[in-house]
Image (cartoon, rainbow, N blue to C red; front, top):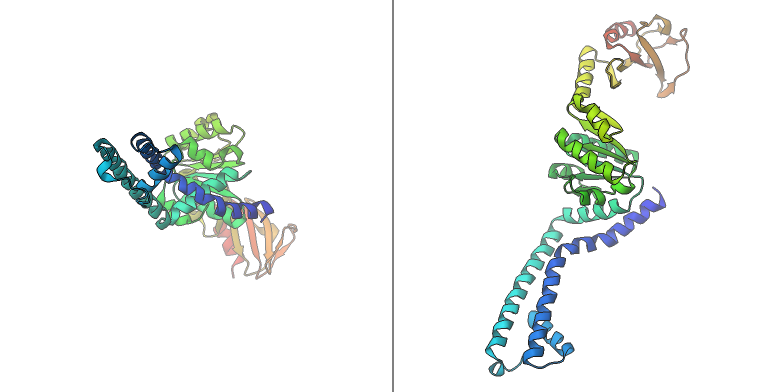
Length: 334
């Protein structure tokens, strides 16, 4: 963790509460107008100077009662106007108290405020935009890698799953929320909305705000890949297609540990893991697979030749056609 990250952690705790207090700013302004109205009333009917009138106006709306003119000597119109301002003040107090209680009780409000402040002050971070498991998984992975990120989502489910101060609950299609997430200073953005139309709209807005931004879009329809690239996406990931390809590879062999994808689907390479239970020479493996690493006692050994003999207790990692994995399993098993 860099000194900048530590400084941001400290500052966000100090500054974020002020962001929350902005929620009651309209009521505070209205209350100030009520005080001013009372001051005008006292200047007009009680002939007070402005300082005294403002002081008296504050006394009335706060019900302190330090200034109380003789009610029998007050004109009826003055009484009526003061009644109206007092009723307005009571309503504003109720609204302010309700907003503050909701903010204190709902811890997410504080976390959201901190995330917005942090997002607008980060640089070269990653912004995850959208809903669903893709965003949650990406956030957790970035967390493990120690990378700075901000999530902008409209999903309360995503907010609950991540439960952190890196999540902004807002509208990904709103430019203000995109600005709060720090799009202008981000290094990358991952966009995965609930439907491809919204993903495309957010992509266009992100590109408008920060054209050089590295943009990765997760789409459901692989037929839209060219459309997204035209819109400015640097990488387009057809989610359902990739899941299908992984599932298909796993159904062929049990040793599948992953898939290296190519977008043209012509050269996908499946990663296989094989526990060695009897000695086998590398050269005896099928020609459709390429050995990559031999794992021996937890150590990775990428240096071997065709004459290398695999020994029991080792693990072989290779790339190749999953159709051959069953044959290889039989070769390395007792």
